[in-house]
Structure formats: structure tokens, C-alpha cells
Amino acid sequence: MPKITSGKRYARAAFELALERNELESWQEGLGKIAELTANLDLMALLQNPRLPFDAKKDLLQKQLGEIHPLVFNLAVLLVSKGILSRSGDIFQQYKNLLDAHRGVERARVTTALPLGAEEREEVCRRLGEIVDCKVVMDGQLDPSIIGGFIARIGDTLIDGSLRQKLETLKKKLVEAGK
Image (cartoon, rainbow, N blue to C red; front, side, top):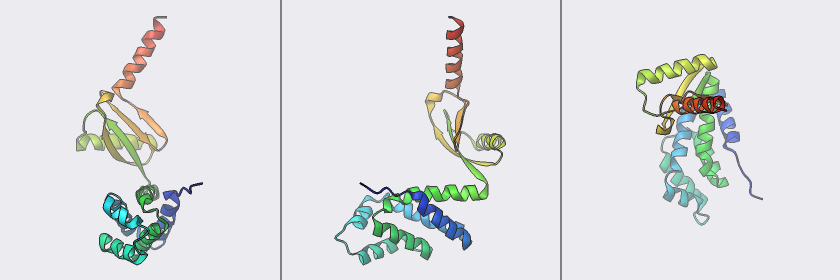
């Protein structure tokens, strides 16, 4: 049976250590660097190669990461030794979520039909912040199929203010009224 390792456990440990030492930013930066490594497929192949000695992998990792917090580097070495460096993106995302929660910030994934300007983004963040009663940071994405308006997901909350949804609702009401 394969063992599945969640990035959440590593992220929680990293966050608690960074918080204890008041090094939240340097850990975030370092975890981001580690996560970026997974995009380099040639490097990942080398780091996962069982024939390459561990010290060579460690040296290669040090060269690729450059200046990085020593404990973050130790985490990278641990991930390589366990063969789970590919999970570093998940660990980084989970760490950012913990950091946001610590700061009282919620991330909203907002989908719009057209790109939003800076003022529109600010207004959407402000209004969503009023709804969830905290500061909201927006991660935007485009989907022309929603026609207009927006769809926002904040944690488990879904706010669908898209024109497509409004048209669907109107269609259902018209069908029901016609019966």
C-alpha cells in the first residue's frame, strides 16, 4: 500500500518553528524557492535518481537554492532523502494558508469574465471582506463563460454573482411559471 504524505504536516511544523523564531518571512521565501525547483524536470530527475550519491544531491540542492535559511535547507534535504521533494509546492501553499490565517487574512479565488482593474479589484476585496468580516486578498482568474459578474470562493463559501448564474435562475423560474 503506497504511503501518501500530506504537505500539511510539514507546513504546520515549518510554520510553528518559524513563528517561534519570528522568521515567518524568511521561511516563506525559502519554501517558495524549494517549490520553484519542482518545475525543473531535469533537476528533479537528478534528485530522484537512486544512483546519485546523497552528498551529490545535497550539493546540487545547495547550488540551486543559493542563500536560504539553514533550517529551510534542512527541510529540503529531508524531502529529498524521503523522495518527496515533489510535495514542496503543496507544503508551500499550506504554509501560505497558515500564514494568512495567522495574519487574519482570507484568500478569495475570484473568477471574472474580463480582467479587473486595480480599483475594481480593491472594491471586490473590500466587499468580500465585509461579507466574511476580515481582510481579503484576491487571486483572480478569467473565465469568459460566466458572461459577466464574478464568482468568489473564500474557504468553503461560494458567492456566485455571475450573469450566467442569474440567467440560469431566470430560466428555471420561467420554466416553473409556464407549467
